[in-house]
Image 1 (cartoon, rainbow, N blue to C red):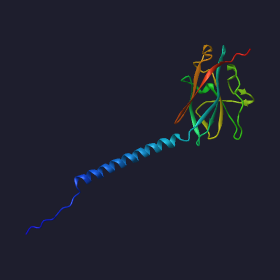
Image 2 (image 1 turned 90 degrees about the vertical axis):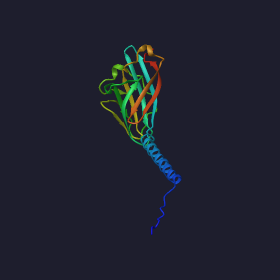
Image 3 (image 1 turned 90 degrees about the horizontal axis):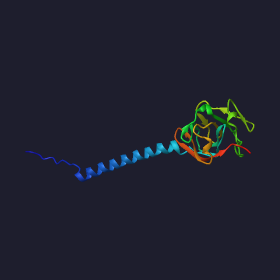
Image 4 (image 1 turned 180 degrees about the vertical axis):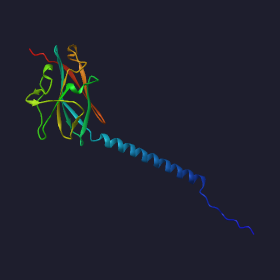
Length: 183
């Protein structure tokens, strides 16, 4: 006597439905992961430009700006560019504003010839940059750039961009080139 054993299996519709649900869940997890990675790297990085200037006269050009880290994490300034041209660190001079203080006044026109060694501008001793600049959360940095490479006297009145690059972002501001010549 032959006994018949009834085998049970899932129908094709149920199998297809299970595969679809698994595929959708995998896609959702991958999207969530990618979004989470992207947001954690950039959400707290916020830099504010203020008091930005580029002055030029027959002796040369000088750029200046105040940079504030308003984000919740420390940043590392990788490079500074004026009009898309990266500035050499030897031409960048910075002053770290002491914690608990703030600089509210505008930055002064400074002679191109003054920006050598460790210049003193408005009683503040500036340091020549030699490498990437760290900027802690909540800190302020005053920056002067000696002789931005591609700014000439005939650029007076032209809008020029100043860019600060960090590990995760690029911050840009535009300024009008001003005359550094006094009456």
